[in-house]
Image (tube, rainbow, N blue to C red; front, side, top):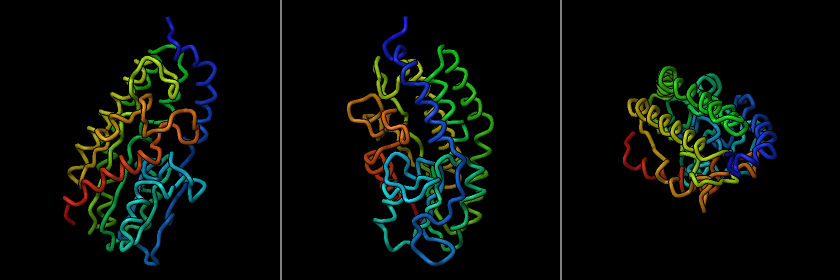
Length: 278
């Protein structure tokens, strides 16, 4: 029998999925300067990556395409370390190939710190969530997630190795900090913030765990892996105090809110960086 979450899908999920495609799945722009504050070509701190680094979910945004936010963990970190010139190249929707093609302009021999989240969009983050929101049968969602899982096993490691190695080649004096992703959902029976059944939410979380495991395995060879999932565990969607946006805010859906970037990502980065050396 369909539960209540499944019953409301025809009302909410189809227009939501269409909106997600428009707002989250846009081709990433070639961001290069963003909030950069210095006149030199390269910056001492450069933030690369996808929407989880650009700050989607915590507006206002300082540009139209990449959705770079002053509330992102990267911009907050830069503001707390004003002695370091800052280059903001992260862009919503960016894959590993997009980072290599469009985001290296501010890297150079003066760069000391690079942060990045990347890999989620390689898996088709938006289209997979759309499928799980709208599919009439659980098997359709599971098939989409199985494809993402297979990509993590077979293709993503090589993509991650390439992007991390290329970052260090472009910024040979830098320390690379690779931040992970949170599991998105708590799993009560009913979740209005994400109208899909509990089984689908559990499957999506399992792929997030697999993604983080793959990222960590590669990242530790090139820099420091910074996990965030434990900090988000009491604050997932469908819980009482979420650090992630649900579908009520379509432009920010399934991304951290201000608390997620500040108390989750920024806190994790601050905790990881003092132990590292350049």
